[in-house]
Image 1 (spheres, rainbow, N blue to C red):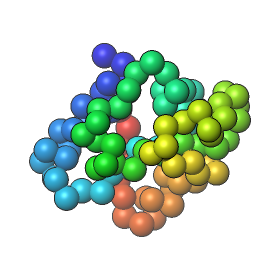
Image 2: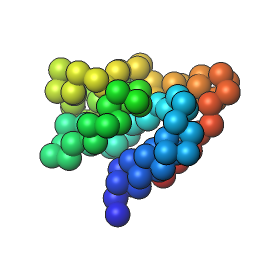
Image 3: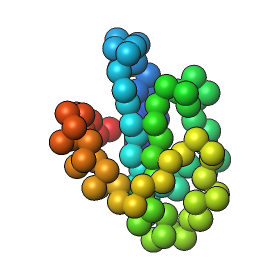
Length: 95
């Protein structure tokens, strides 16, 4: 099972238990490539989860923001986004 498969399973299971949860998936480093790969995100999660990509990682991997699906939000720095969310009370769960 890939890390993305594990991540999506964790998100699905979390939402099954805590349906009102606010979930943000932040892809940074090479993980940003998942958004432009052959895999597709489960349709049922697209409206329930905030999918985010790190602009620094996009640049490092030569991925243009226009290559991303419309529902993916780009932030300047993935690690800063994670740190800010933790300060807001979010938990950081890594697959």
